[in-house]
Amino acid sequence: MPAGEIYNREVIVVQRDNTVLEAAKLMRQYRVGDVQVVDDLNGERVPIGIITDHDLVVEIMAAELDYMVITVGDVIDLHAV
Image 1 (cartoon, rainbow, N blue to C red):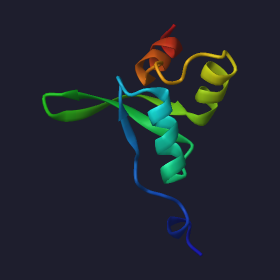
Image 2 (image 1 turned 120 degrees about the vertical axis):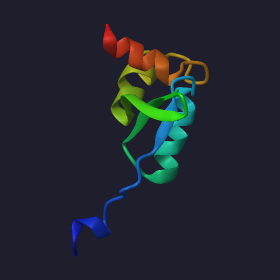
Image 3 (image 1 turned 60 degrees about the horizontal axis):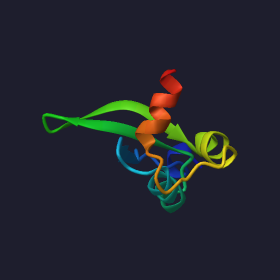
């Protein structure tokens, strides 16, 4: 069976101001381990980062942060440090 028949080719995206909870729900819904973070610049989606399931567990859950208010942008900014 070709790999293309098994793997999801759709890129799941979130905006910087989405919560990490929203990102996690998308990961579960689409059965993926990451989502692409994009900004909308003049009507065009520009990738600015990626959030993984590992990020959610290690940076949010293990640190006991409030996943209902922490945004994907907060996590992206954390990686930039």
